[in-house]
Figure 1 (cartoon, rainbow, N blue to C red):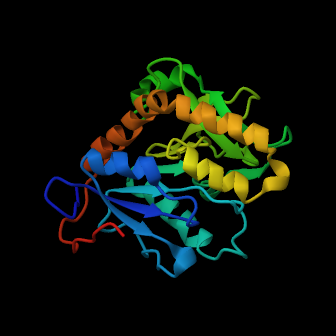
Figure 2 (cartoon, rainbow, N blue to C red):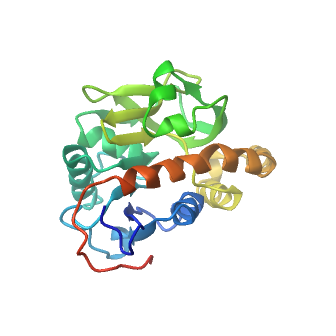
Figure 3 (tube, rainbow, N blue to C red):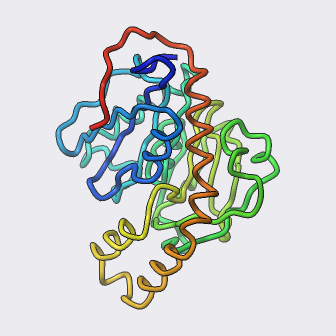
Length: 255
């Protein structure tokens, strides 16, 4: 393990937009004993050349597409970091866009969902494989829901993928994309305030009444969602603690 303090694993967090932070997931990771090294390349932060000095990788969501490298140049090095996580057996998790980026990095492809935007609190369709998964078995202990707010989905899966959940429309909802790399299409990290901001950025697509109902549903389900998804962060920290790596890197505070 290579934590910035003894016993504290260091998680590299790639944030793609100011409105899509680690939020609750980041809080849970810190509560579970991790230190976060948050990089915001859209604001000028450099991504590291490799994962040396990090024990886990978290790639967040964003409004761009997983193949929009020409418009968002940092997507290419982000994919390289995902491949390194797979090659070096470093735990890595992608959320929404991060899930699609991880799939693309490992040979898959994402595209707009033919069935249209996925929006709302949707049931998680666990597969039998989820109960034995090193990461998501911490969550797949019973029925669960998660917040979807996405246009794109993974339409071509990487070789060797293990499907852990499918959405109600049959779309890939959660997967082990490589032995130590996972993706979830839903958003365990967001609260109602973040979703309200996303809806406000595209008012033509989201009727005011529909948004109000969704925000009400999120507020009503807050305790349920925290109880469901906090174990994801706790298990990721456990896996990160078991990651072999150098221990002589300088401490980097969350920023």
